[in-house]
Each structure stands twice: as structure tokens, then as C-alpha cells.
Length: 370
Image (spheres, rainbow, N blue to C red):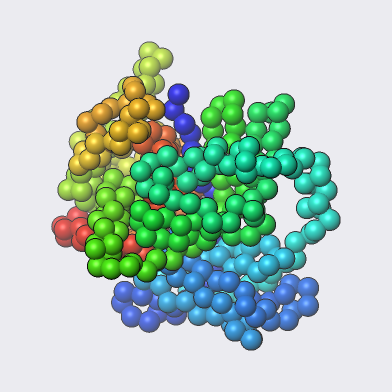
């Protein structure tokens, strides 16, 4: 049975001033919505990147980011996280107004659902496999603070829900990253084998013990990038799909069976619209289900063991679009709205353990596409 997996992410608008051709600044002020007082020490970061900072005594912050799109997150203990999308092609003044969490409502909600005692011992393995994954890279990950996780299980619904009191700290020894993941919620449906989680990850590069370890991490990151969603989105933005090893097909129902339709013109079939070399492109596929083939690498043996009916000579995923809705892609591979897309196949198997930040510098894509 194929697993359906998607991540829901939120985004935020910010004050942007242009610094140079390849980067831009985000500046803003964070205040308490009730008292209007500036909030010192609030965490501000671009999710799924290595860029983060904290507000000063006046509640002000500045972030410099490489050109592209990002989801900026503002968080403070005891307050609801605040987030929205930003881009180097937009300019907005940012005033972040933080609202306090309603503790009483939280407590009522927790009591009504029933927290599982010894939840980590009972459901830690399920959570780890569905959240971090089961790939070779995932197997090299560890959660450093499992005590922040709270587990809630409904036997009647066959549903496991996990919340976190603080950021989940994940150490990825394979790729050389420490990830601070602000987990909003995690839900695993046992009856359908569907997993949905929402949250905001911040990456931090680990310090290598020597040049050999650094070289090992560099190679592992390159391998994780190849064929990934990030690789695909960047290749699509640059209109270099075939050159980078990708092929797309439309998956349609014919005689009650899924049939793959080969496409001669990838970009025409996706209705790619581009205005210039730095603005986002938009895509609106002629069919909502797009099959994505990556021919430059075979699937992991662990994946094939779980999915014996899947192709063994190439990686195959399906990208499911909402009907008649455009998706925009930034030059760094960031796409939005991210909660509009769902994945099945190989991409659905890759989890946090194989994730790379949006500021990951991959080998240059040859010019000639856009």
C-alpha cells in the first residue's frame, strides 16, 4: 500500500530591502499584541534554512537571505508562532504582533484527548519512523530531547497524535545537521497509513571533527539532493528537467486503471509561465496527477523491500496538484502554497532524515533553460 504523506507549512510577510543582486534583507519589529511592548529574545528564522536570529531590546531583527522564497517564523515561549511567506521580489513593512497561548483551552484539550503515559516507550518508534524516516540517512538521526513530546492515542479512531512543549532537537550524523523542529502537530492514521505533520524546522551545520568527515558530509548531502523535491523544483525553475535526469508524465484513469501518458513538451504540459530570470515561475498542469521519474539513481534497497511493486531501475514519485490551481516556484526551489501539494511514491518515503535546507548549494545547473 502506498503511503500518502504531506507537510503543511505556513508562511509570513516581512520588510524587505535589497542589499545586492544575490541577496536581500528582512527587517522588522516584534511586539506583544496585548501590551504593545517590544519583545526581546524572540526567535526569528527562515524555516528549512540555516538562517536565524533573535530580536534585540527594542524587539527589532534583521535577516539577510539569498535570493528566493522562504517561510519566515517568529516564536516566543508561551506565545503562538507567527509565520508567512517572503520573497526577494516583494517588499513589505513587517510588524509582528504575538498573541499569548490560551493555557486553559490547551489544558482542557489535553485532558479530553487523554495523554498516553510512557508515550515515548510505546509510540516512539512509530513517531521516529514516520517523522524522521527509515532511509540510511534517517537511521543516523537521533532525537535528543524526547521528553518534550506528548503522545495521544485514540483506539476508536486508530489515530496517534503527537505534540511538543518545545522544539524537537534532531541530530543527523549522516548529513551533518542539527535540526530544531518546532512541531505544531503530528498525526498518524493507522487505518489508512496516512501521516500528516506540520511545523517549522531550522537547520544548523554541525562542526566536522576533521576534513575527512566534512568531505563525507558534503558527498552525503549531494546524494540526498539528487532526485529530491528540492532538486526537482530548482530544475523546473531553470527549465532543465531532462538535463538533470528528470522526466514527467501525466497519470490518468483509463478503464479503471492508472495509465502513464508520456509528454513531449514538459513545460507546455505544465503551462509554465516565467516573466524574468529572478521572479517566481507559475505552473498549472493540464492534469492534476503528475508522475516524476528520476533516472540518474535507483531507489534505495530499503524502499524496494517495503514497496516490491515499485520500479527498481529509477526513482518514481507522483505529484498531486489541486484542480485548476497555480503553484509558484522560487529560484531556490521554494514553492507555494506548500499545503496544496501532496506526494506519493519515492518522495513520500523521504522524511526529515533526508531533508536539506533551502540554502543548500548544489552543483550548478548548466545555463540554457531560461
